[in-house]
Amino acid sequence: MSTQWLFVKEKLRSFVVENFLFGQEDGLLGDDDSFIDRGMIDSTGVLELVQFLEETFRVEVTDEEMVPENLDSIFNLTRFVCGKPTEPGMSQ
Amino acid sequence: MLTGEGADEILGGYDIFKETKIRRFWAAHPDSKMRPHLLRRIYEYLPNLHEQSDAYLKASFNISAASVDSAFFSHLPRWSMTSRLKQFFSDDVREATRNHRDFEAITERLPSSFPNWHWFAKAQYLEFAYLLPGYILSSQGDRVAMAHGVETRSPFLDYRVVEFASRLPVSLKMKVLQEKYLLKRSASGLVPRSILNRKKQPYGAPGGCIFFTNAGRSWSDDLLSETALRKAGIFNPERVRRLVSKCREGHVAGAGDSMALTGILSTQLLAQHCSSNFGRRL
Image 1 (cartoon, each protein chain N blue to C red):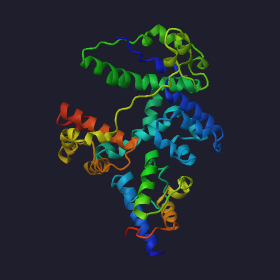
Image 2: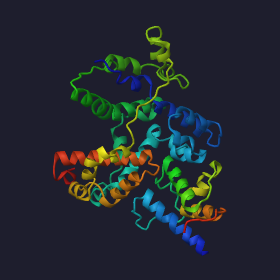
Image 3: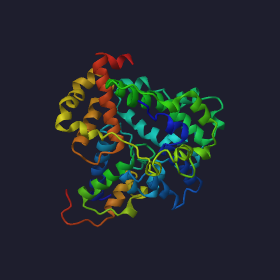
Image 4: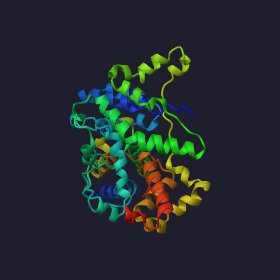
């Protein structure tokens, strides 16, 4: 597992816990847990996620990419972000 | 003053009836690419919804065969969104309500023949029994009107009108996706055509963020302070603090967050006015 993978995953996890669980993780959110199935996310939540990805990792998310396979768990998000070409100056 | 309260419930005016019809239609062919567009069409006024892929729409509108069988199919999307508010409860409240099953509690109160009703009648009943009395008639209607010395009368709630409407076939209430079909037909010639053909547009309260304008903050800060939250004992101060800062920073604040914030503020206001020990007496 690369350093980049772990870095991205931790950033994503802290955003998700802060924004959708309001800090209350209880150690129960697994990397593969679906945000939809856990009732954590609504239609605006998806947009919040996309905004976060674009601002934090400087990746571009197209309409076609806004699907659960890319966005609906910590694992899916990490895989999606790490598979994207990033623009120069990605925030650290 | 005469008001139209009850007409949407008994004669089929609400978007939730259209929504339910479309969700059933979509659930019959869940892989259809065209059917989800009908939802986008009835919710033209909800921009966030238009940016959703079909997969997310399907999840947030509970499009599945299992959901269609639920007695509460019509209200599942709204109720599941609202139930996310429970995450803000304090540990004490969560513990006290751990064994409470909302859906079972309502199921027990439904009329015994409910499972055999037409889906439209089920949706009407849920609106009529659970939203109309406390929310529409009281919070939004009578209390606001009487606070300004206005006494209202609701002719659509005359029991004879309600009984008549209950005997009408569903096709006369909503025809395809035309709301209040019979009422509009009967008013033709009495009411200008522009009004009859006008698309129904719900009015909504501004989002929760208005509480953080300069004017709003002076009292919202107080009600949402850690001291006030601990005193009432209903909500978890740490989680509320995160919600508040999310709204303050003005990140995309969705309906769920707005609803949570408004619910917390209203409850805190009630707690403050009613008792210093409100939470523990619930």
